[in-house]
Length: 163
Image (spheres, rainbow, N blue to C red):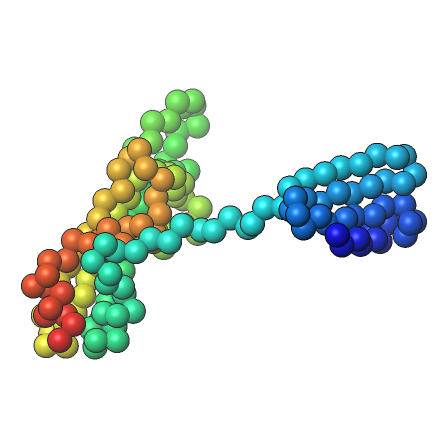
């Protein structure tokens, strides 16, 4: 068991104990005679997205290829200067724009749907392009888009790129 004192108003008011056997923390307020207990939890791990064929952008670049990744997102365009003053219901249409437009205040990005496009230039000058689509029901994820696009490379294309 490990005990630690907190730096609140009075050093002896609170104590925190860690019980290794039960993997719990217990905090005690000696002034009000209250106790709190909680279970220690590991930090959540971000999901790792990897192509099923084991290929990564870094491997392609180390093999001498040039790789460009373009993420395209669905967004609403808000042309504030084109809106008539008396219109209350403005129907806006979603369109596909590069994700680099995120900082543009004229666009409101939708959280779901989009595309990832990879352009790979081989040392010989030949281009190979692959894309992936995130459906309108799925939350857009950059890493998942790249992994899905890399999965779409055929074994012939992988052999060409890795030689």
